[in-house]
Every structure is written in structure tokens, then in C-alpha cells.
Image (cartoon, rainbow over all chains, first blue to last red; front, side, top):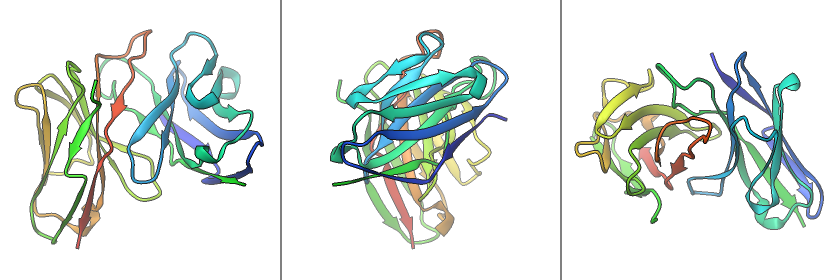
Length: 117
Length: 117
């Protein structure tokens, strides 16, 4: 079964510091990978997605993620944290494109990012 | 493009009552999804429509849950005889098509919060 593991349910960084949110997936086939952000009491907004093109993916708000097949990872980074980045971040995966379960996003449990002034 | 719209945003109901949530997807998106998110967890897939056809249902979708998309546009999710364990945010999402090399984006609404007392 497909799964996504996000290491660290809560990450705190100082404003201006590097943001690193970790995501590992389990798969023997190439996945599609996504990072979504959720602000309090709101739905999910797509930050970026990997669809087997470039392994380094740039998203909105200065975030980027690198797909590393050898490490089965898709970590999210941002060089300099801003107060407005405080939110919950979800990594998600889709594995196969035909048959049952094709279009289900499987989400990790999320990482809550706090930014300290 | 007005985004995915959900109604109501919040619902408090007594155990045993029926509730219905409505979702209006982005115009011309033929795929519509329902997810459920409980506190501290990532969203979990419930069901998926392509146009008016319900193509997949999760094991999470018990017999008390029913979803429809009668004309291939808006969708409703009804929960009968609500239980306290149904308390969660119900997220609707839509996409313009399936996943291929383009990796179509799934757009989420802001969710409908259900509290069963």
C-alpha cells in the first residue's frame, strides 16, 4: 500500500532561517508527489507538485522541493522563513494512473510550522 | 475561476441527525472528490466522481454516507444517523482531468466542519 511519512509533527524556525520539512514515500514505481499548505480553518492550497519532469520543483511563496528517488524523499525547503509561512504542511502522493485507487491522494499526517519572530 | 465552494462551512448537529454538505466544483472540472480530515491528521479519501459517475469509494465511506453528483456539476455528501466519530472537516476537491504527464492539479475547497454533539 502506498504511504507517506512526514518526519516531525511540529517544526519551529526563526524568522529568516531555513525551512526544511521532510517527506518520505514508499513505492516501487514512480509517484506523483505534492506539497499542500493549510492555514487555520481553511482548505488546502497546492504549493508545488512533482510529475516526473524536473527533479527540483519550484512552487509558490518561495518554496521548492527536490525529488530524490534513491532516498524516496521529497523534502520541502525555503531559504528564509517568513511569519506568514506559519501553517500546516501536507505531503501527498499518487502512485498509479489506472484501476482502482488511481486518483486518490494519500496524505501524510502533516507538519505544523511555527515561525518565531 | 471562483474556486471550489462548500456549504455550509460549519455544522453542529445532535447525534442521530442527518446532515448534508454541498460542493460546487470549479466550472468545467469533470472530476470531483470528497475527503475527510480529523484533528491532527491528513485528509483521507472518501469518494470520487467523474462527471456524474461515482467511480471509487473508500472503505471509510460506511453505509450511513452517501454522495451524489446528479448532473455532473455540484455534489452532495449526506451522513445519516450521525455519530460523534463523524466529527471532522469534510473537504471537497475538483480537477480538470486525470493524471498523466501533466499531473493535473486537484483544487480543494475550504471545507465543511461537522461537530456531532
